[in-house]
Image 1 (cartoon, rainbow, N blue to C red):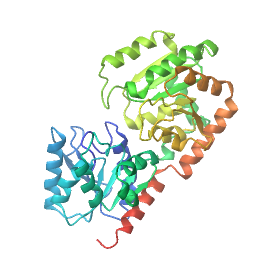
Image 2: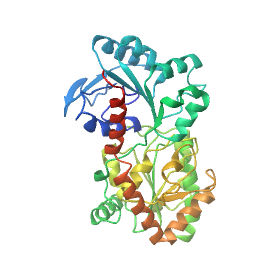
Image 3: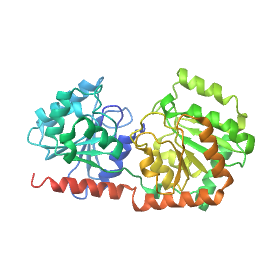
Image 4: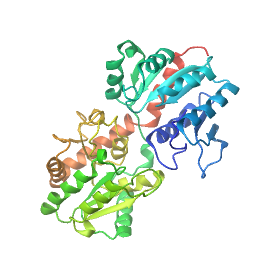
Amino acid sequence: MCSEKLPVPPIRGGAIQLYIEGIVPFLIKRHQITVFSIGDPGLKDHETVNGVEYCRVHAGSKSEYVQLVSQQLAARHFDIVHIFNRPKSLRSYYNASPGSKFILSLHNEMFAPHKISRQQAIFCLETVQKVITVSDFIKKSVEKNYPPAAGKIKTIYSGVNPDEFYPVWTEKAEKIKQEIKGKYGVGNGKVVLVVTRFSEKKGVHLVLAAMEQVLKKHPQTILMVVGSKWYGNNRVDDYVSHVYRLAKNLPEKQVIFTGFIPPKQVTRFFSAGDIFVCASQWQEPLARIHYEAMAAGLPIVTTDRGGNAEVVEGYGNGIIIPQYDDSNDFAWAINYLLENPATALAMGKRGRKLAEERYNWGRLAGEILEIYDSLGDY
């Protein structure tokens, strides 16, 4: 059960949608899989692809989406219903299919008091067989508010397909980098890469401020910002306008905004980078872009917000800046990596190894299959 905002496969992007797309090729080897998601003009309402059934419903609101999916649940039988990030929807799904066993995957702080009533939360946590979280940060946030649920909650870190990324030290990546630089008309300086949505909580404005200092020491450095305000479009709001104004403080050829890039094409831009920066200002559950940067062999600069540090601290694959909202700290970290290329390369290689050995879809799907198996006979 995907959340209602974006479709599967992730033609419009979305971390949950990418997650589902990544694991179903492994799950289908052992189980019959049906994926429910919101409908999209670019996708059929119903189809089976590589053995996976996709049911997409067209709804104008979250409540309508839940209602329509519940109707389909009631008309069929599923042994396991795996809900993504919508604990409040569980009661409707349970009422539609009380004979099913339920699993909840949490990608955000959906059990925060302002997001769910205590009654709804307790019903959900008592009904589900297991809660899977994307980070210990999310796990601990649920356990803090609902201690009795602790035994049901398990952190399973997300991942990527490393084969979709070319490590930056390879000839293929260098070729891609030159193609992208040529497309945007930039020089041969090192590329500081940011892949993000344009939101104040994502911190793009701080990276732009940091680049003013970086360019004083390393004037050929390029900042490339991949993304837009929202998945699938390039809408401009007050914050986006503010970011564009800040960029005018930098030389024109030293900052590039690509706008929205389809998910399947974003992997190429990771190959074009030299340093990856995640400037999260909010308590980020754990941004999946860290895994993508690792797969591309990029040294990571990130903030200790939410779960981000969990895949960097102690692994030697990046730098966690001391003060998350200080552009000076971002500038220091970027300058350090520019001035210590051997260290940056070693960080990138450690990240690539982590992606290959730990943070990949096969390992993730394997841990989910263990949970399915633990439910016993259906």
